[in-house]
Amino acid sequence: MYLGKAHVAYTNRKLMNSEEAKLLLQRYRMGLCSDSEKKAVEAWFDTLASQQEVNWTELEKMQFGDSLRSNVMKAVRQDAPVVSAGKNKVFPFLRYASAAIILFTIGLGAYFLVLQKREPSAVSVKMQPDKEDIAPGRDGAILTLADGRQILLDSAGNGNLAMEGSTVIRNNNGQIQYDGQGALASENLYNTMTTPKGRQYALILSDGTRVWLNAGSSITYPTVFKKNDRRVTITGEAYLEVAHLPDVTQNASERNIPFTVLVGDLEIKVLGTRFNINAYPDEASIKTTLLEGSVQLMKNGKTSLLSPGQQAIISGNSTMKVYSGANLDEALAWRNGLFTFDDADIETVMRQLARWYDMEVYFEGEIPTETFWGDLQRNANLSSVLKVLEKSGVKFTIDGKKVRVLQVLPPPR
Image (cartoon, rainbow, N blue to C red; front, side, top):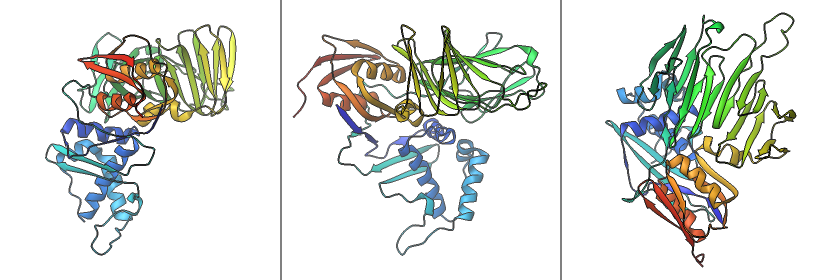
């Protein structure tokens, strides 16, 4: 079944509380917003510019941070608004023809109104939660320190969280950052970030490498890397942008210190690169997708080298195959706020939904054989997503955190 480019829209003004507004703006800063969310935030900039004078409330200062505020002010100064008779002033770079999205900030909340032009092949669903519904996942994680102490990042404010040896751990607008200046690599302290089901989070390691964790994942890493070695252990799914780090040891000035990711008995060696690793234990295979740079995969004595645009798939019997022309949109959909399916069966679809919505899935009767193509937005309530899937004839029921997949019905004509 082709799902189309599913558009999720608030057809009525919906009061967004301060926490939801803060999370949306954090997602914008981290580059995790969907296209609709990104346009909504940028349209809010447009609203500010049309008021000629930009006055920031304390809430806005908290949500945007100094750096983003300065970028907005710079845009206000550099891009003189265009004035048309009878129309509001707008930034030239904020014009769009396919959508009109307005974000209003009022007191401690925000109104988020999305009016999106529908494409002929698109599916439009309303995000109006029923009594029996499950909200989408959000930013959040658990940080386990070297001594076993745990910090719940869902509710942690900005600023210093802890000291590990001589390394400062900071929470900076929705991502963890390690400041290891002056720290000793011999400290040998390890932290673990874990995202439960229904949560995702980001961090910057001490070498500048950026990591985004999908729901139901974890990464274990040293608070300070050794001089000539960088190693982390990952479960679940993660997207990494590995920092170039020159090897300053004798006769090695031309080399970069390798970065190694361990996933069970699979070893992935990279230099400066961008790639996604999907290694959930309930999936039939491990997928490594390369966007930039190069990576070397080693498993059971076998080695494969990936080039940009390639994907390595390791099946349960340890067979490793490399495919060119990988579907990068599918591999990185979660980073872009989407579920993207490419000939996915219902079990694959429901596993992804189960992680993001923190739910249990039960199949009653024969498992449907329908396959799915297309995009769905991850910021929709579960009932909205299931309504789209039901167009294939599959029936779902929601009971608390349990979702039942019922018998296949004749597809609607």
